[in-house]
Image (tube, rainbow, N blue to C red; front, top):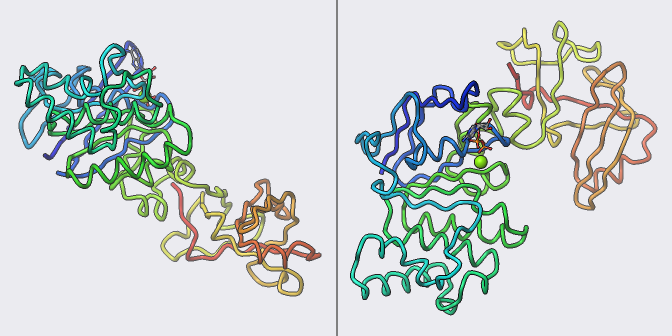
Amino acid sequence: MTLALTHVTKRFGNTVALDDISLTVERGEFICFLGPSGCGKTTLLRIVAGLELAEEGTVTLDGRDLSETPARKRNFGVVFQSYSLFPNMTAARNVGYGLECRKRPRAEIEARAAEMLRVVALSDHAHKLPSQLSGGQQQRVALARALAPDPDVLLLDEPLSALDAKVRESLRLEIRDLQKRLGITTIMVTHDQEEALTMADRIVVMDTGHIAQVGTARELYDRPASKFVAEFIGRMNVLPLDGGRFAGRPVALPEERQGAKLIGIRPEDVRLHAGAAAAGEGLLPAKLRNIVYLGNLAHLVLDVEGADNDIVAEIPGHAFRELANAPQIAVELPRETIKVLE
Ligand SMILES: Nc1ncnc2c1ncn2[C@@H]1O[C@H](COP(=O)(O)OP(=O)(O)O)[C@@H](O)[C@H]1O
Ligand SMILES: [Mg+2]
């Protein structure tokens, strides 16, 4: 199903939680709302779910306006951060709960619950209570419960953030896999950029109630539209330019961007030169301020002569071993890797 949000606005007293949000989620697409705490992700998801009312704007599903449809009639599956399973019901009964509410025949409910538990690989745990399951297992039950009534749209609000790192990583792939197999239109809220990059077809980066940028992981990483997006997705050296110069030296920019005031360069794009090669046109003389050596990689913090900003470079471990004792280092900012940030 195609889900469309048009000019959605929501205030809580004087707080503008959402400011004129428009977005289309394509059929079968996995969309992540990504942004720092308090930027409005949950509020937007709750409006889609019908759990919160927008002041302005509409939510439509395949062109049908949902304004008059209450949450329980929307046929959306929802999973929240806290497992929110019924503690006194077995896993199987939790999974079947949505169908129980719809007064489906008992045999159908049991068959569907068993099927969904098989899908999330918990068949052997059907008769356990939530307290007898691990966090990851409980969240898989919650997922099975959300999917059991065959919802039109799946909505997930930070479903993995209460789990430890290892479980979280394997569940990311599991959920992603399941979502693709079922072809269900899905929105997931997260503040974890790695989670969004791993799971989403497209990411909606949010900043204090508005959409900062929408794109695939690669689009956002390669062409961030602003400083906010550049720093939120991956790491970025953000450098001010003064008349086309950084630290008093000219920076080579693409022709059409000569007037840029702020540029960004990813740590892995920074090129370093040592020894005799360190004196050349367009190079910035620098000193090593700090080193984090990770074996395969090294992160170097460079104090550039005449600059207020340090530059962070990420280079392969072997390159670092050659560079570590060089008396002179210079930084190169390759023109083709520079991003202009407005
Ligand atoms: N029920 C509420 N009453 C008042 N303010 C709220 C309420 N829910 C959310 N807010 C405010 O709206 C903004 C967005 O909140 P939320 O959607 O929960 O953000 P996120 O999920 O991105 O952390 C925040 O400033 C939050 O304090
Ligand atoms: Mg939230």
